[in-house]
Image (tube, rainbow, N blue to C red; front, side, top):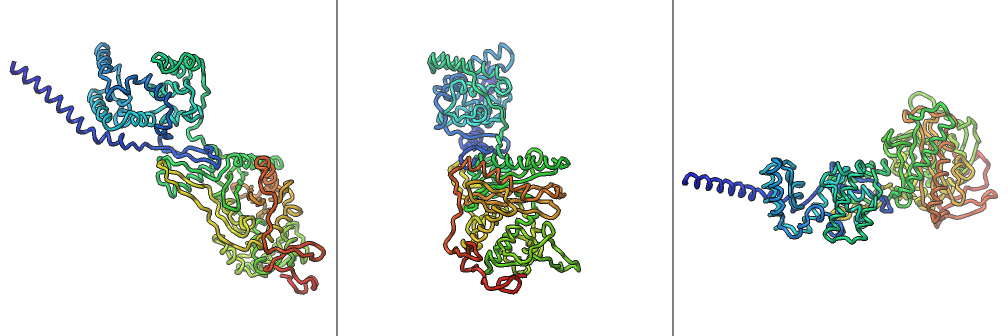
Length: 638
C-alpha cells in the first residue's frame, strides 16, 4: 500500500512539475502574442489611391484592426470553429474530453478540439506537431492568454495571423486577393468561403478547388442558420450564390517599372519596407501610365514596320511623363516589355541626347544677353579637338544657311550654327554654366553642343523642367508621402533650384514652340494645345529623342538599340519619337480635357515689330540693332 501511495505521489509531483514548468515558460511565449508585431505588406498606391503593387518579404499580410472586421465575419468564424468562444476561458474541456475519447477509440490523434485561442497559440508560437507535451503547453498558454487579452483582441490577432491559402496571410489580405473587396463589402457566402479556409487552406483554395471551397462554405452558412445567426432569406441567398474568384499574383503589380523605382527610393529611408506595413502614396497616375505604355509600344511597332530587318529583341524605348512645375512623375515606362527585360531605360541608361541638348546652349546664350533674333553663323569650320585631329562638323543634309538668327537655327536644328554659337560664348564658360545647372560629369568639349553628353530620360526631364517651369529645375519624384502602420506620416517635398529668370525661360519656350509648329518636330503638334519641344538624334542614328512639353505636362521619349548599334537613317527624333508624344498627348487630353492649354507669358516679356514680324524680348535679351548688314557686326557671332 505504501509503495502504491508513493508511486501516486510521485506521479502527482511529476505532473505538477510538468505543469509548473509549462506555466513558468508561458510568459516568454505569450509576449509574442500580447505585443503582436507580424510581418506586414507595404502597399504602393497611385495618386488616385488605386493600388499599384504589394511589396512584402515572405508573408503577404494586410492588417485589419478589430473595428474594421464586420460582425458577420466574427459570427461565421465562431459558428464553424468555436461556438462557445465568448463563454470559455480559452479551453473547452467538454470538447477536449469528447476528442480524447474518440482518440482513444481510434488509437490516434484524430481530434484536436482546439478553441480559437488555442489555434492562435499554435499558429503563433507553437508547431502543428501532435504531441502530448505540445498540447499541454498549448492549454496553459491559452488559459494565461485569456487573462491578458480580451476576446476581441484574440480574434483580431487570430484573423490577421492565420493563413488563408494562395499566399494570403490574414483575412483582409484574402478578401482583397480572392474577391478584390474590402471586408465590409463581402457577402455572407464570401465570408463563409474565407472563414472556412484555415481548416485546410490548400484543399479549400477557391482558385484551385472551387467545388470543395463552396461545399465547405455552405457548411459554414448552414451552421450560422442552425444557431439562428442568419435568417432563412439570408441562408437561401448565400447557398445559391457563387462568388467571382480572382486568381492573381500576390504582388498585383500593375506597373513593374514604377514599383521597382519606388521600392528602391523608399528603401533608403524605410529599412523595414517589406515588413513594416507602410502605405506609400505616389504621384503616378495608372491611367496615364497605361497611355504612356501604349504610346511607347505603338512607336516601337511603327519602327519595326518601317524596317523589316530590325531586331525586335534589341530595339527598345522609354518614356517619362512629369509635371514640370512640381516634379510629380505621372508615368514612367522603362522598356517595351518588362518581363523580357526589367532593365529600366528611363532611369538606368545614359544615352547621348543629340540635338535635343541644343536648347540649353541657346538658354545660356539668351542669359548672356543675346536674343532669339541675334544672328549666328551657320557656316562650316574646322576645330582642333586637342588630340592633333581636326574636327569638321556638318549639318544634317550637309548644307548651310550662312548667317541666321537663333530662332531659325534652333527651329531647323542647325549643327554648325550651334557649334559656332558655343565657340563664340566660350567652351569653358558654357560648360561651367551647364555644370551650374546641375549636369554631372559634363566634359569641356565643343561636341557637347551636338548632344554628345549622355543622360537618362528621367534625369533629363529635370533639366527640361527649366523651360516649362519658368526657369526652375525641379527634380522628379515618385513619392508624395508614406504612412507607417502606426500612422506616422512622412512627406516628400519637391527639390527645386532657380536656374534663370521666368522671362528668360519663356524666350526658350517661345523658340521651341516654333520647333514644333514649323521646325523638325511638326509630327508632335497636337490640336487645341500649345506644344514646345526639341527633337534629338545622336551620331549614326543610335538614339532618337523627343523632349516635349505643354503648360502642365513634360514628356521625354527615347528609342534606340540596347547594344548601341545604329538604327536606320530614317529613324530620327522627329520621325521615331515625336509622333509618340503626339499620340500620347491626344489620349491624355481625352482623359484630362481640363488641362491648361496655353503657356503663361510672365512679366518682363515685351513685344516689338522687328524686321516686319512681331518678336519678343526682355531687358536681359534686347532685340539687336537693325542698322547692320549680315556679317559686319552688330549681334553677329562666329
